[in-house]
Amino acid sequence: MSVFNFLKRTGNKSKPHKPTDQADRGILVFENTSEVIQAETVLKQKGWDIRVMGPPPEIRQGCDLIIEFPLIEELQIVNVLRKKGIPPLQVVPVTGHLLKPVDIFQIKDFDTYLMVRAANMKLSVDKTTHMIVNISGGGCPDVPYLAASMVGQTIESAPSPREIGHTLCGYALQLAYEEVQRQCSA
Amino acid sequence: MLCVAGTVPSNDFPLLEGDVRLIDEKLYIGEKCICVNRGTPALLAAAAVTADYFGRSCFTYLVGDTGTGKGSRNLYNHLSSVLPRTSFDTITFHYLQPIVRWQKRLQKILGDLSPKPTLIADAGYMYAAKMSGEASLYDLFTPDVGELAFLADEEAPHPFYTRGFILHEAHHIPGLITRAYKHGNAARYLLVKGETDYLANEQGILGTVSGPVEEAMEAIGGTGDTATGIISVLIDAGIPIEKAILVAMRVNRIAGHYARPTPATQIIEIIRHIPQALRDVLGSDNQWIATPETSIIDIISNHRQTEKLFKRLEEETGTCICCEGLFMSVKDAASHFGFPLWDTLIDINTIILGGEK
Image (tube, rainbow over all chains, first blue to last red):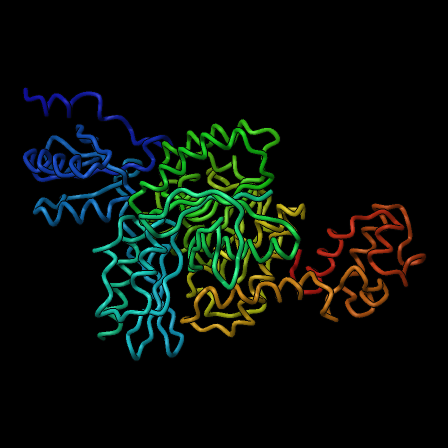
């Protein structure tokens, strides 16, 4: 039996934790262990607090190992892995393996302006000039940074939240940004 | 004294602490100048102008963080070290990276503070307070509707993962509030910011503020931050928490109204109207609002809905204010009959301005 199979069969099949120290952790699932090892190397080199472990039983995709990581930084971590050519198959919170990112958008039309909300983030644009006029909502520290970088630029020229954001709030803003692009090009 | 802990969107900004001043629409901590934009600087600017109104001050611990969490970890560590030696009456936590391990360490210290300060959690810090399972340690959470859905979802570790069936309930705010309390994911009080602002506790809705209405406020980054800044100062000034919240939401809305906002309005344009909004709601230069000098007869005759408040004061003081003090000013009557002036004035103005209690 491989070490990996052993890990999978022992200590890591406990039920999901309810609010504990693990509540802000996520799981990266990969196709094979080679990708896990590559990803571990990349993420550790960049200083992230991660660990390799066996997957919980609810995870039915991927190989015998997963990487546990700080969930709030999902946006930047996945971005780094994607650029390295090792995107994860699946990303889920430790506390809820079936949870999925929000896919509900609220759209508010202010005549001259359009506001799109995704989860806790709202992005508003001038419908004529496509200028990003405001970013509101959210609570992670990259939100003010994203707002400072994007407000005053057009949706065509502004840096995308995926490029310069770090957190799940940034990820939600990316979804709002993509929806605004879709709305403005329709 | 009020203390605000938060971040500014810069990787080069060092950990600073000190009193905050707002001069020419820029924040100063010592000699360090900070532009006012959304996030903790907006909260601090609103707090600074409100503190000026009350002749109070606002202290801050501030660090740069652009979302990597590095600055936040530094600040968590610093707060864990210094807070046991401080005596703040009110502490407001704001845009910190939600990191449960660090927050649990800090919460242990907060729980041991004696006397315990009033603890307010907004933005990222509120997310971690919920995730850590320690929401009840806090006196106030200030979510918007999307964040309330997150608090109501006992499974979600972040608003980004709020389940769809709960998000679909976003129009049913009382139900979400009940669900948040049921799972222990709300502070002693919840202020839900939205088209109508809801003040609630575990027993249910305590009050709402719904005017003036400016739809564009939702799109403007920082309007929730300014609300939290105003609330923090009012609570720190000794105003009972329920009253402080209702009055602050009214002030925030009036300041927004004066800015004649569009979705393109920037938060500083609203902050510059907060002093006027404070005067409108609490001050002495608006004939429609009760001041310490306004006579009781003027209040009751112009605003009959305040009569029940005076009846309650009569019961509490065992006197007949309307018989013996009808022509007195509120200030003189408070002194003569022994009821609290400032609390009563806020109650009167809250009723006059349409805040239902």
